[in-house]
Length: 472
Image (cartoon, rainbow, N blue to C red; front, side, top):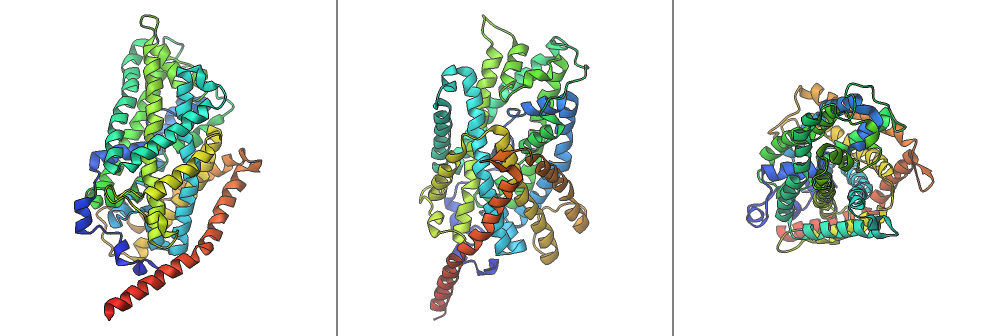
């Protein structure tokens, strides 16, 4: 079934009556939501410095926005302005490459979400353990992670506006401690060693640092799935993407440079959550209390929760759009009458995300990049296909450089993803090579497409029946 066969009531465009009822995200709320879908701030970047050292680490976070973020943001800006549909990138690929690849796009994204969403409770618990050793005992950490998933799910069930406003407050709370780190760092210049001394590269290595940095800069397309819930999406998305790239990049680069001048050795970033210890060194003690360390720990928890909260919003719209197109059972299209939230999709996704809470951080990152990378390349392919097949499609924003520029935009992201695939050879999941495991999940998407064929046939039949009745 092609896009022209989608029933009128499932149109990607918002009707006037829907506009009156639906809550909308404005530009700044979308920028903050995108910030959490991509980054969540400086937290989680420890292994970039740990693996690559200061010099290379700063170079990585400087160059990746140019070669990874901007091409992706350009692509999303064009496709979001041309096709502001609920389901976002799934609808782009489906229209540009057909039903089969649209299904694979959604499948790989949802599969990646199972591993991606387990990362944030993992980070949350890293910081929580620093506040109380009780969470290091038994299953206490797992219970805390599960509670975080439940809380994020509950907030999402209250509606998109609640998620957006919550994200603004979380952004302020997680950014404040690092603002203090940046302000205090010049007063501690060279206090912890020679800032110009060569940094020792640890066992994680440069490639591992690049891999973690890619994950920290990944997820720009996630905001596209809520397009019908954004105010003036054709104009808002391109601006939001550029604004979010700037905010995310600065949230990495400025703290890295600030800590570098203090001379803190890379060994201080030996594990996730190490920013708290570094902040404690810079802030010192007040009345015997490491106040800045405590604030960073609190901010780390807010960051992890904010990312999960925003991504529940994004990923849950995929089953909704797929159900409307006959790609999933229609129960996933059920929405709340008051908030328009796809509550069935939210609850089912949350249950799946809770299953991977015990996997290690780097293993989760590797699987996330392998699966998300495949879906990202499909989006770039859809960008080129739509430029060729539908040159007159209205686009309020275009990737610079014409068709050649559009094709070249995907080259550097592709090369970086190849690096990620190389690194995945060193990870195992359930005793299986990480790359092989990722390929197995992708292959399951092919089988799932054919398994759901009866759903699409029944939708087409129901649509034809309604059209025949209308003609009579």
